Length: 395
Image 1: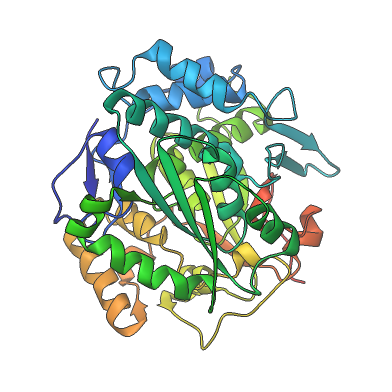
Image 2 (image 1 turned 120 degrees about the vertical axis):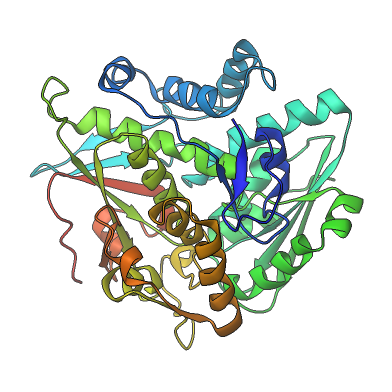
């Protein structure tokens, strides 16, 4: 399995290269050169698997055994999930009127990002120990990424982590989760500005390939492919628990509603869909509605300012994983994706071409200012709803 940049100007890499790179050298994001196609027989076989077993199957597809032997990979994933509070790791709660909520909050920091980051950290440490290397992880956070990243690597001898925390833009509990970890390898800094603004210097740093190589830098934000890879399991698990039957053809669709900020979980769902999982995606956003405007009007442009809401991790105007979605929708058109994203970076505004905007499998969206109370939480990315009918949340 090889990985290429969405902008097409960087050499292809294997999983280890994508894991340690974050942004590609040309400013794009790494994606699999080819996506495995899953037939009905495979979906039938996977339908009875536990969540950790689904993660193992997906990781086996995207990480070659020459990089991590299968038995070692399985052990790393078991180790990653060993501290989760729920025996199933992920649990589906069935509510009234066909509404289901996938509980992704049973990790150490109560954020859904615990699921992908605990696995990513295990992959990192495997390669680092094997090669006796040390890295420094740089993370910008709107709340839950920072605390989950710290939890996943705190105390690791071969990893230092630097977290940039936007002062006044995270919930108090998430701020405390980050600032009270007294480990030598954890370094947390409060910075002025919002999470979008602190992403700009981070991206500039990673664009300096020589500097990154000299200091062994990498990121654990959802620009990292390993994060998106593990999050694909959420969608498979949700589908298998909600589909009324797998004995019909074609397989019945299930609608998956994803509260989203940087669109990492949404990109994971789009990839699962491309692999053959019959899901319909709805991205739920708050006042910071760039994804909603993109899907409804083709308007991928910044608003005047970021609006602060109770769901601080959704208070994002630059959903960088939309670049992965544009690349998928365009049929892996790297040149077209590069043109679109470079225009957006220059002007902070871009109109989606009609041929891209009209794609049939583009996610639906709903602007839902009260998404937290609706799903029973005031934290953004820890609930993942699965609906049999269209999401209805106007207020």
